[in-house]
Length: 355
Image (cartoon, rainbow, N blue to C red; front, side, top):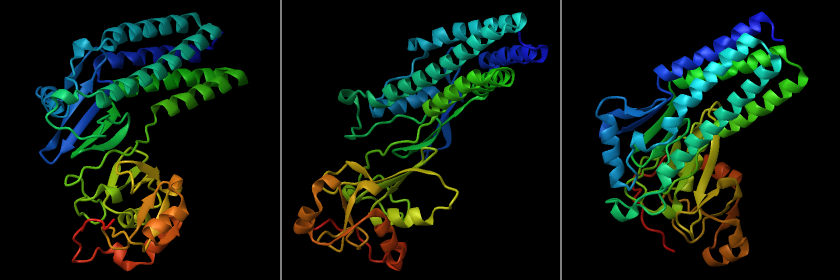
């Protein structure tokens, strides 16, 4: 049997779920130059609303231009199921706390954990469908290779919008409820229970994290986050993504290397990507790419740095384009020793590549 303090804490864990019925579970915000105050939507236990009365309709209007579906709360089945599921979890939690049976408490907590993982995974799946399954036929704006999936947690750049996604007060209360229930069992249980809980938490964290992936660059719309010039040739484009999902875009490998070297040591980076010169739009992790320096291809910042997939073959690349092979670490060292890469020349014009 559970001890009385643990039974009371388990009851408190169940009661915390009441907040999910009152406050939003999640909030997604969009900020852009034309919307400096931002647009936002709140995902509640049984509906989706705008932060302000007109926000949801404005978001649906913007989404129409890029082929995204309208957000219609009544058409989302999870919003009909979730109030009943959380209500049942709350009541059974109170029942288990009243009985004080350790096995029932363990089963309830495992059910809570599995349901939470399934809920977060389903939310991510909904976001993926929302951002990838586009109505190209009726979309006024078509950008090949572009998807618009918002981040699960953190920030992400989507064209000229910065999308930010965080749990609302109701979602935080639900996470606190789960954490309290797990804490009760860890404190009261044995080694086997603790190992099972640790494994469950690992799975939950892995499900919740969204490091972000590189997106399609748009010539003339995207700009370099290092030199501030407009990206005019995506064959030289590069991206750096932080652990929060923030995407930084660059017009050249030189600018990417300069930016990466200037980041504070406390900044967590989830990915650094360069474009395969022969397949515009195809991104490669920088530490897996082949780089050529000082060859026959003029790059935007003048260092003649280009990247290729390792499958291209280094001998064939040198025969075709000339230059010297470099690794990503060598590229960073090269740029760090070249003051011109840190300060773009005044006559920088982004002329097209010669090859």
